[in-house]
Amino acid sequence: MLSLTKEQEAQLGLELATKRQEHADLDAAIHTLTQSHVGDRMLVQRLKKRKLMLKDRIVQLENILLPDIIA
Image (cartoon, rainbow, N blue to C red; front, side, top):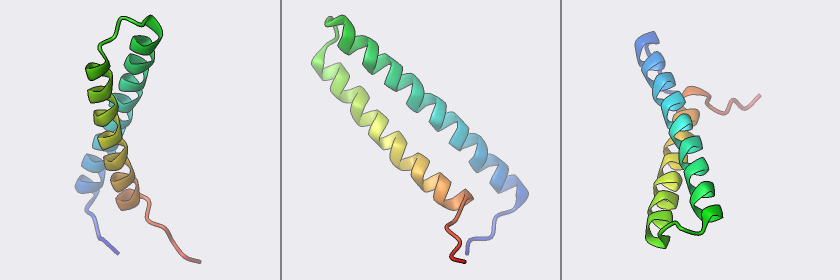
């Protein structure tokens, strides 16, 4: 199990919160662009790719901060 200092844990927690907010913002932007039908398809694809990368990082951070404990 990875041992984190309180400072490292706080930094990772802050990064996690930031990534979650950015993910939600991208989701809203993608939704708005697709609903308005004026959005550039390439832009939407880039935003979706960025959103997917953020989701991967969120999962990594959650696994570090909240490890699976087998009881």
